[in-house]
Amino acid sequence: MSVQKPSIPKGTRDFNPEVVNKRNYLIQTIRTTFKKFGFLPLETPTMENLSVLTGKYGDEGDNLIFKIVNSGDYLSKVKTDLSKTTSNQLTPQIAEKGLRYDLTVPFARYVTMNRSEITFPFRRFQIQPVWRADRPQKGRYREFLQCDADVVGTTSLLCEAEIIMMLNEIFNNLGIDGYEIKVNSRKILSGLASYLNHSGEESALCVAIDKLDKIGTEGVFKELSQIGYKQNELNNLAPILEVTGNNIEKINLLSKIITNNEDVSKGLEEIKSMFSYVDSMNGDLSTVSFDPSLARGLSYYTGLIFEVKMKDGSIGSISGGGRYDNLTGVFGMPDVSGVGISLGIDRVYDVMETRDLFPKEVKVATQVLIINFGEEEERFALKQLSHLRNAGIAVELYPNSAKLKKQMTYAHNLSIPYVVLIGSNEIATNTLTVKEMETGNQETLSIENLISKLIN
Image: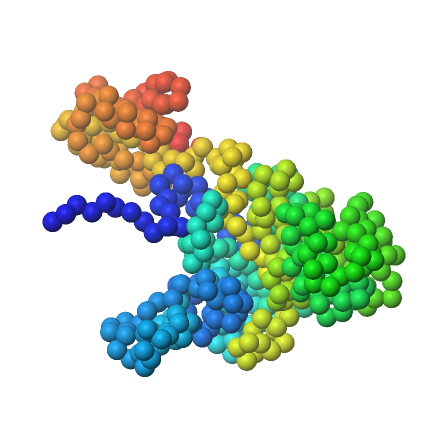
């Protein structure tokens, strides 16, 4: 039998125990905040019927869905000559299911299927992996974790305000500062298209403006000119993309530039209303910036939109979302408004890792290692092991009486903070010698005092 070199699919990753502990800390912090705001946990299947997934993400997105071939002899029912068929023609005949591309469409499917059992407004959060058949590159994977929170069944702007509150609380609890929550409204973008004499063409305008950070104003104008924008229209757009000042100043300036425009007026009023809600809840608006150039690419947004970035530009968007008015309509349940956000777990992780924000204890699974000196010491150690575990302390006994250096190296490599040494004197006095690995300090304690020390 030949030896096979082990490998994993491109675009996927293994996570070692230290990374998993850090990710779990990050996820638990986010989950705790979501629950505090009344959001309920939801999970949907890894795979969905292709009929649910396809047609929701555009042609490019459809091509990135991982298809699952039918079980059994999936080619036996193919009715066409394989030499004369394309992959798009063949797929419906051999695959009925696919791995979920995101959490939003499965959520819309769930809400539609369970509408009679759901109490609206329905608040849900969902933290699960998704899959995309994308070209792997730095920071882009084929399997990654998404973290969504949505409220459906209400148009109240209190929901948008609570998104601001949640984002602030999550980042504060994680110790992250220097972030900016950008907000805008699709209504403003729609009114902007009308103001520029391109009424009803806001999607094309949004696609171009969405690239502002990457290609600059000149690049955006070049793209717009290629789809029919005239120079005088671009001249009218320039001051809007470059508007400065605090939030109220920017709102007032925009209302003076674009007058008698119902969409823009409504969008600005919604933003002011959201700010008022946050202020009434004693929320922090210093992290929030109204940005009329914020577009976000997804076409199903209809109201306020959000994006969170680090001010130093060290990483791309770490969160985004917005209001959508008819996400469930494609499944036969029209006019259900909702608003939601998605947090990029990998990017938030990178911010915390580069800034060394993870608490030391998160990296550690075991708090105490009991050194194994032999049969008699092991019998005594097993009783102490039980006492410590019953007190909720993570502890392990080295499984055999190896050399002391080997056991101490084991504790060092796993960053175990305390080592317990048990010899004949400790057995006779019913005590433990406890060594703190970081300082090298040793002290003799009873099991009760050790428990008290570790818990307090």
